[in-house]
Image (cartoon, rainbow, N blue to C red; front, side):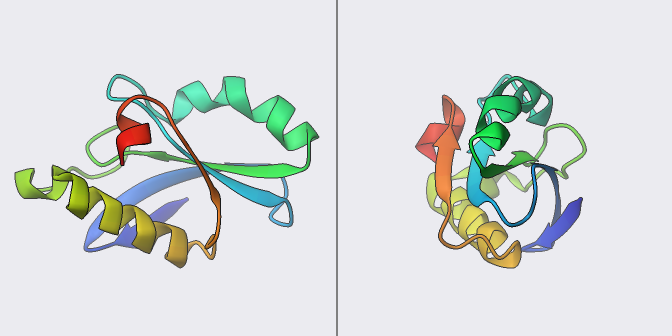
Length: 101
């Protein structure tokens, strides 16, 4: 699914039923949502619903202006994305770059 956040289209994939406990995954700097297929099966089997984005500028998500990649700006974008998806609160899983957001 595509979500418009702060005038930027962000691509998000979902694994599992919408009723599961939400997990949100932000990939590392060299990855994308395609790596989430390895994480999803055991988490879905445990009753979670996993959401993973293609971070701005990755996969089919639009890039940001250079200042949009500053940590405070990314954190704000992530908070707005979680809110727009109705996932507040959610458990955050981040790898490398995704953990720093």
